[in-house]
Image (cartoon, rainbow, N blue to C red):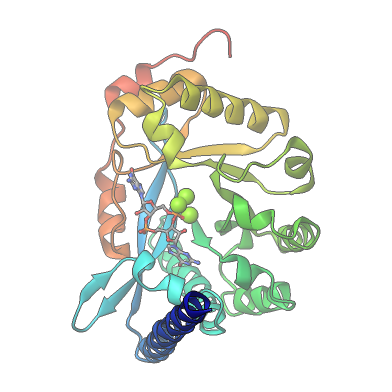
Amino acid sequence: DQAMYQAKQTGKNRFHLFDADHERAVRGRHESIARIRQALADNEFVLHYQPKVNMRTGALIGAEALIRWAHPERGLLAPGMFLPDIETDPTNIALGEWVIAAALTQIDTWQQAGIEITVSVNVSANHLQQADFVERLQALLDKAPDVPPAHLELEVLESSALEDINHVSKVIAACADLGVRFALDDFGTGYSSLIYLKRLPVHVLKIDQGFVRDMLHDPGDLSILEGVLGLARAFHREVIAEGVETEQHGKLLLQLGCEQAQGYGIARPMSAEALTAWAQGWTAPVAWAQTGQLDHQ
Ligand code: C2E
Ligand code: MG
Ligand code: MG
Ligand code: MG
């Protein structure tokens, strides 16, 4: 009886301890959400852009918008530092709409400077699943009348597209009716079955950087990558590799028949102004233009 009483006591204490920790975590998260909401009002968020190129022709084909927080005390913060805190909070939707609006403004600015590119925006699962997502996207497009909707691409994680495939496939189809493109981000990590891919009317499969990074030394990753390229061909989807860090990565991808790429080996994410200058000066490595595709493809 004594032992049982002690166990109960310990259990209870542990519960209290956990409770206090939990409470502190919740309070911390609430403070963080409030701070992020304030930062949105104070215009502290910025978009950086990472070029997407055709490795064979050297053409700039697009740019991915990646959010950063220009924090007045802590400097430029990466999305992993603040997005998880608002994942399930309405602030997530407000921030997501800010990103789309800012990207549309940037497409317009580039267009006026003679740079015609598609800009991709990452959309969270929670945002995409809002009942009025399509209507509100339409309203944002209406505010940017000079931007062709096909110059906007939305990237959604393969894993979150699978959360509610019926609903998500309808949303993607409705956005496609507006002219907006869709890409499945981090493709290959979400374990889509073929039937799912058939039902998701996305334009682009974006091969996860993990497979690209490891394909040079891991035959398993190389096989997955070849499989994804085969799937893209079979379903008539475009394909882009992310995480292209070296010339060697580019060369192998070209041999396998993948021409579109994004990665530190081409350019890091940068400010919109820096990308404008970069676009004028960049040329693809000579080796890439000379790389032939493997015969069996
Ligand atoms: P993602 O959409 O898969 O974006 C690619 C991430 O990989 C970016 O990190 C980019 O800087 C990084 N990256 C690009 N090339 C290379 C490379 O060659 N090697 C390596 N190691 N990394 C590379 P970042 O900017 O920290 O973004 C991380 C994630 O945060 C993004 O992954 C995306 O899921 C999310 N995110 C970024 N901006 C937004 C946004 O505006 N809204 C939402 N909902 N999510 C965003
Ligand atoms: Mg992305
Ligand atoms: Mg990705
Ligand atoms: Mg990722």
